[in-house]
Image 1: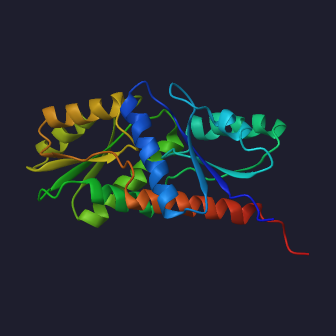
Image 2 (image 1 turned 90 degrees about the vertical axis):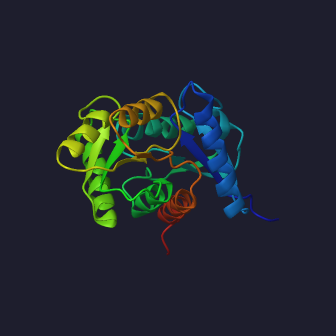
Length: 239
């Protein structure tokens, strides 16, 4: 009898904006196409459905890897997703938790893909925002890595929770002499905060605004890397 396929459960934050769920579904389809031997599902912590526990409950006797679609290990990565794993202990499914997506060079590759080619002389890396200092350090690392790749200044900015906001960051770079400032996107999917970041950056003079990462090939490969790493950690040690 052939063993059941590995179940891969992607866990997104969730949003009232239907575009966010559509983007997560698109990423799940892309991972499924790239790895047809996996049984890939999308799930959401809030707003959209289904919830991760509901998906896991439908996988009795299976081995599942839970992949947090989170760019930093802030509250959702430290509290909400581990709570799902804890609650899943009562289900007849073997659950392994993968790492969050950031930090990773693959994210930088994806952001480079999404950033319009517009002969930029400075970039704002726009993120949702967090009060978690360690998570902000991850975003600062990404901004520094993007700066090194593009050979132009890059400033991290946040749509909420902490300054500067993307508009203020664009104005700061323009005041320092940059004439063609672009906004790179540290967002997985569109939604209220992405729209706010894009609008404030554009209104402050950004000449290019990147789309969210969505189903970028680099993100698909990163998800696969997280799955493989998680399954390697969960293998029993050799006798």
